[in-house]
Length: 253
Image (cartoon, rainbow, N blue to C red; front, side, top):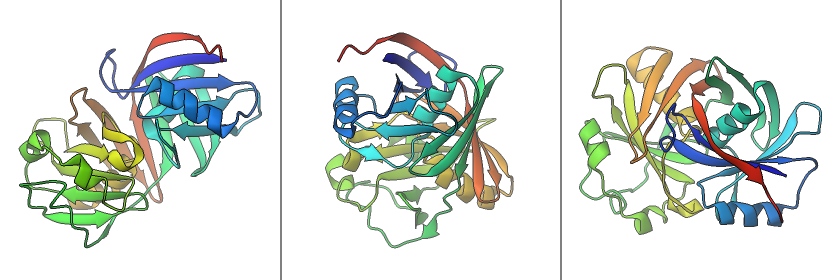
């Protein structure tokens, strides 16, 4: 089985979000895949059955659990395979195209709805302008990108929030960046995700409505950092970004 380590949503190695990509000849046991993901310790590892006709089965695992949707590991998988790919996933069919150094992906949009979620213990010192909930994540919007960049969350408290992840976001603070975000997922074993494609399924509808433009650029302001281009297409959202393969080899177990 071939194993790749790919930095996604970046054109520079050792930045963006690292993902494992395992190419399978046939479906694998879920327990084994979970062990591999725990061994690699990336926020997600993707497992794709390459010998099946499209749509190819694709699954994602954090170090502790399987998740329904993952953007950066899908981008990494499409980058490894190249060309046009259709994947069968727990979130339906996902279409990806790798061309000219960038991967584009079409994901289901997840517009957030206003919700009463108390995040004060998990995000001390911040006063949200808006709190909303998507299918998987809670979105917390503040007024200044500096608050996002400088946030020091209480991860233990955030783990108690009933959500896969808590997304902290604000308007962009430099040319070419429409909004900034950080994503915390201690409830699924990911304290802070470096760049989260699936979170942009929620971010893109919110900022599109607020800014009045369908094509936007988001910066995820983690320590590694990364850039996600978004385009809202009705009930779908196109996410695109670059990727860099940093290692490849074989799984021996």
